[in-house]
Image: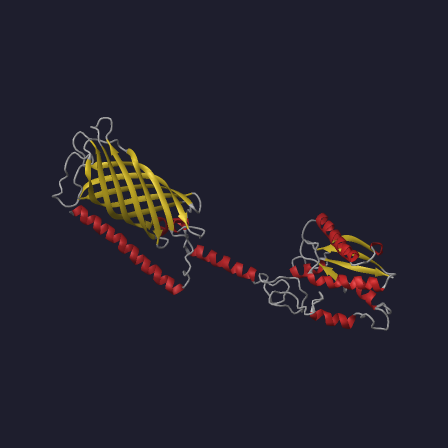
Length: 435
């Protein structure tokens, strides 16, 4: 009776402790409102096999090896939080005599519900290791014992079981862990000995049989989060690191390299000119779809000679257009490590192509540049490929290839290397025209 009472009190204490801690955790969560999404996996499958030893009762002349191989269990575990959980345990034991015993065979099947305490998280294992863990468990259920030899008994011996155990863990990965387990079972109302040849005295209340299991096995963690509750680090340092990572991600996502008001993670073109109006995706507004941003088009109309403006067919009668080109007002720009002109730079290529067609005696040289990121030799080759790309586009528009020449001039170190917007201005091809 004292043993049974002690076991019930032990189990009740574990349950009360778990409930108290869960209530405290819940109150903390309500105050912080930071646990709406649980950051760890809660389910696991625990498969184990190993040895056992029926302590008593066995009839005189019946013995088992110490220990005896022949037990297995399957646990389906759910962690309510990173410290406490519940486990449905299904187990099997095969009992048979050793070489010095009278022959017998029997089989036990059990099902039990257990409370689980993650001692590693309770006492702070994460402060010194993330590889080793420790669980303790305790609970109760039912056991069914069947007898095959020497007496083949049809009726099974039904009894209650109470268990307590300890489970060291070794983490292999975020999804798999090895474990060892040592569990003690006490049975109530067992009617026959484990060999099935004698009755057990049930007149005295309490445990009338005991069994010890030792297992090794594998835990498989289920869920979509990175880590299971067994290994979740809920320390202040870990939470601070997580917050720093979140802030860094927000800063990265909300950076705006081209200063157009649209963060990079939404920006489809983060190389738009300063001051040019953009849509919600960061693309320069171009209502007439001519490839020139609307805010630049009016300035070009005012600055550059238009076709038929002076009674001629767009010729550069006063040399103004040639001066603008040669002074670097017209350039073709590129994305980082790319030979493809940016969308808005197509207007610059079209501008030169129109000029060459309206001035058939003119020739043009194209010079490509790269920023300072990368090796000198690579940037020299990249600058030449950029110049050739613009040359090929001009030829494709109808400009005679004999009127064009191109070269790469490597890195342009005229701007601050650490400034991303400034580097965009030197990834370019500039023009030089001669009449």
